[in-house]
Length: 528
Image (tube, one colour):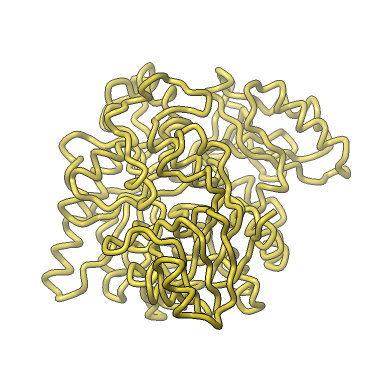
């Protein structure tokens, strides 16, 4: 039994919002109260003086790609201000590589560079190595000729369904692959073994603890799940993971009778993940009206609401909800139409009202803004996307951006927020997400002083709930996760006394990190 005392504790429990001591027995919280009281009540507990530090519930990233994030730590960082700097980093990696070894990177953004890059630029520095660099959005990739040849991509290769091979005026592939076309080259890359993925995840886990994360909702696929199960079996999984299932495995999940919540408090089944459209970065998000300056481009809609409803109906029969990627206003509209049918189906068939989600809700039509709250659909959003994407949104969506990344709008209409990062698209550091949510500004302070569409700001209390109580609700764990209260799981973080997020200047969030992190009553990251 542990007793942490002389602390300032934010419990997020309405009947007992603050305390100065907390008692932990095994993986659960036994009591929260005042130091003098609990010290006298639990004289035999192992005592730890917190020296005035701040204790808060551990944070959960409600949308993260754990395998991709873990492996991205080994890749070239292509998130650069200029294409030339990215190419310099690629060239540096090539010099260290063996002939024919794959060169992998992530993070470039043609909107920052001002134009799409080309295969020829990579060929000049990597003639003997296939190169594959994913865009920041993860909805586009940049490959060289060696990589395209391995994938047998020629001028006659057809566009795959819901994807595009970018071509020049002569019909030759430029090296840019959009959406499902990425798989043509991506499938050629030797896959890491499950053991290698698990090892990368274990290393990434320690980074996430220092950031204050005690849980994640993972959106990667089968090999990610297998690696997580391996870590769990070895007793090495010390993050709480909600594992979502890709829609292409719905039939197998249905046949097995899997349902949401199957598993334990460390690793459990979430929902069926569906992609409704693309992303803003490569201009593939499905829109009602064209992108500004691209009169013929309304993005890519992968399916309509009727097809999505059929997936949802089948999933609901075994107790699985849907969690649907929707960026553009048309994509969100189609998802909401499907959810309207699905709610009716649940009622008519006496099925539970499942905790369906929309991932991103990145831009929504004014007529649809209230529909998530009305149908109790979770708005799984990433505040840092707003500040990262704001210039692109203004350039290509214009006035539609008024309801882009609209956190406050969703909250006021009654939707429950579950906040995250979409790492490795953005940093998984939740304090950066909190800063974006409460300021609507970038780290450099722009746009100052009020932020981008400042009416969409959240309070710190609302934002913190979005990283704690919201994800707990989405995981059906609200009775034991997201608060510091008796019988709740002992997942918490410790901050220096001067770093209370509820009283410090917002700018302090940018450099904040956990001094110590506890998951399940065990210190996994301790004071340095």
